[in-house]
Length: 204
Length: 253
Image 1 (cartoon, chains in turn orange, yellow):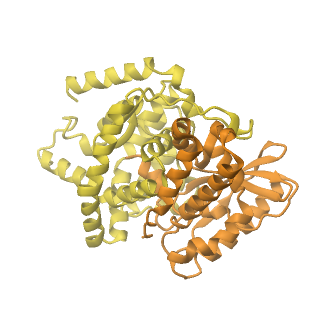
Image 2 (tube, one colour):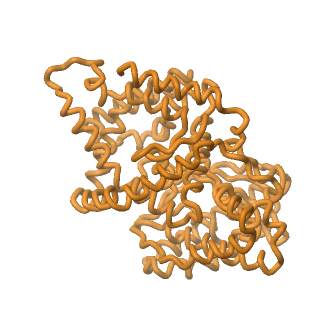
Image 3 (tube, chains in turn blue, cyan):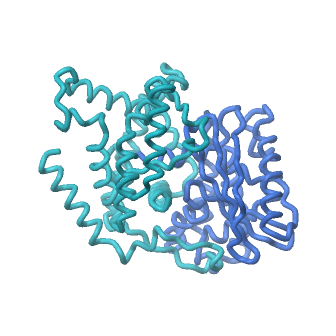
């Protein structure tokens, strides 16, 4: 299967965007702050503590740098507009939880990955994409990871991550589309709750 | 390659060429910076055989759970990671003709030269390809691997309907044809296909090598699948989107 290369390559790299992002004014500033974010998250992920507690430990750093509300809204697609405010809040909380769990579940091994940062590409006046190449101890080849960032009043935030060309947001968006068309917010909430109730797979 | 297989590949290629354009927008996606993605309708995916594909997906899921995963875990327990990596490197190096020919077919001459350099260095200094010495040479450390599915994509042939193959997993019509092309270009299959006639290499050796390659890759592929399943709210769609996006990105490289 060709796909396994992509998924394995993506091990832990989603985590690399965490950390404090300041209110930088340009995409160059976004890149600079992304670098420090990577360092912060790697420090947490490879501090030698048990992986079972990683999700809780990494949560504050992720909440500071990810625009969870934008990620969730875009992952839900057009159906989002039909959600009530309460439903939107509930879905955002649940999806954020799933994202954090996903990221912490991808920390594998004990060796820090090596990261090479590319030049940021401005995609709009308030958005940019920052390519990186990541080499992990378990991957034979470098992994292409791109961060899409948006400048909000509070500073630069990550709103999507692309691993080998596969968008995190678009992938969940495709999954939720039919679900929300058929069952609306109730179906999305029920599905997310059921997903989060499943035990977390242990990291290898 | 016998004629019936060839006919099937041609049929799939025709399907891929004909059944395309209207739904191909799925692979293109929409860049969030263009507008707020929330309000953009989700592109339709070219998946007219979804009912059959979901059935095959469930079959593969069962196969993964009850057959492949135990084999993968057993193999990983017996064979150390370092050895598995060496075996992967060996087969990857052996696959050089596939990458070289497809680089040429796509007009990427520099890339074909890089592949040749990688092959020579890894085959010699890398002890027959077991060690990827090329990883330490910056000019050839990161060469995108080309295959025939990508070549067809570069030639303008659309991916055609999404297609889940029993045991092998996600694919599309173009990649099924590509798989056939890569199979023929891989030296591992040259004896089986009658391209070389060496009495000292019986078919059993080719089959044993192919089996080793398959089993050696199982721990990674099973782990990947389990990871995707653990994260997805609809594993079938998650796999489909990831596959199509990944392949579309590879064609562009």
